[in-house]
Length: 203
Image 1 (cartoon, rainbow, N blue to C red):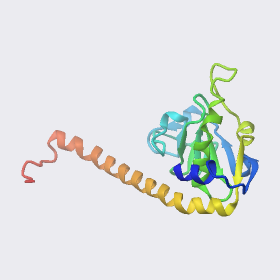
Image 2: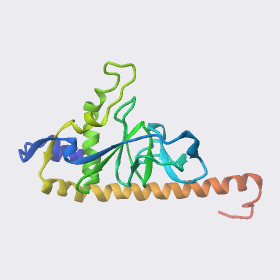
Image 3: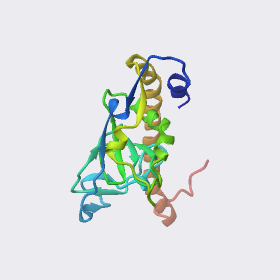
Image 4: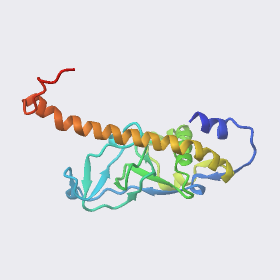
């Protein structure tokens, strides 16, 4: 984010054009499947209802659906579009998104640039929290129309060349954490029950 701010927010470079979010991204608004299609057994597509499943960077698997409606793909930015508007995660994998989420997909494959652009837009998105209503929300037209400065593609490429490998490392670390968590969850009950005996192990 510091690099993004240095290159695009705090820079005096005038090589930008005035545009909107729709110039750099395709936005898909979520639609919830039938409740009868939900399961926790891994059947069907991964399904995220809203920000409740959000983690540090990727959402936590909880539900699946056999009747997916609107989909996001790995690398899409997942945006909370209902109160509170503006919370962000990134899709770890192909997934179905419910009405509490929108998926923001880079038109040019610059997923890191789009992610940090959305972080930079947090103050603009926060305006939609409770504006004129008890519960805040934002629709597709309002998202598409959010004004942004669009840098030259060469500048975006420069940013992506640095930021994307870092984001990939975050993804790799997340995958390792998931593997270690699965091992822990498998071994701990066996250790507690005595099914696995470690008394003979000398450290």
